[in-house]
Length: 330
Image (cartoon, rainbow, N blue to C red; front, side, top):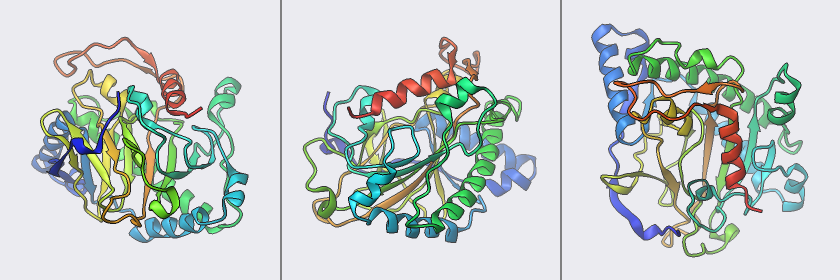
């Protein structure tokens, strides 16, 4: 099955903005309002905008500046840091086709990425062999390491706050999810979406990132607005532009979280449009933090009336590995 940009609809999908401050320090009614809005939004589209997170915008812009300095290096320099999908380092053009994960046939995604992951090794040598390797930091941009390590520390804090909020939104214990995050295999991608002067004219059905759902628990995205930007799919509205707030993170849940909730919440299907014909030089960059569990976590659907579908229990990382393998372009 091929997918087409022409499927897109005009307008923006309704995604609410959640200010975390009332939930973190407000009274019972303010907290209850946040919890209700989160539950409703994740049932509808699987997406939220989140403000009140406390992450310095200067940190985000600093990462973009340093990463762009890397991405604009000659390809033979970048190739020294080449990695496989799921590894650490540089993913060059043509490395991924994210739509493969849902069975949609597209040409390879029009992007380059710097990818980093878990910074501490595991005690179990079998887990360590598959899920840990030292992060690879480009020597040409030495400032990138410190910026990213600070950013990842802030993301870990934010992820745990969000997961506690999600536990309460389901009417469960606040640590229902965080108890499984003692040593997670988080991922972090800096995705560069250059214009057609770098990637060439898009092929039919080709995207910056093809239609897919994320694989893990929660994804925390810092994005830029653009004509060739993020779109979200809902059954009711089809493909629509995702709303944008420069102060907000875009947060969506992934497949494991949807399974965990027994499909009460929707794994947010999304895509990133190709460079637009009327702005072919448009260049965007996204910072994407993928929340995951501690390896060996057994993901079991919460029962009704909270859950709606009782999936077979699945090992979190067996599931993740199959998805990562699926999107790799041979």
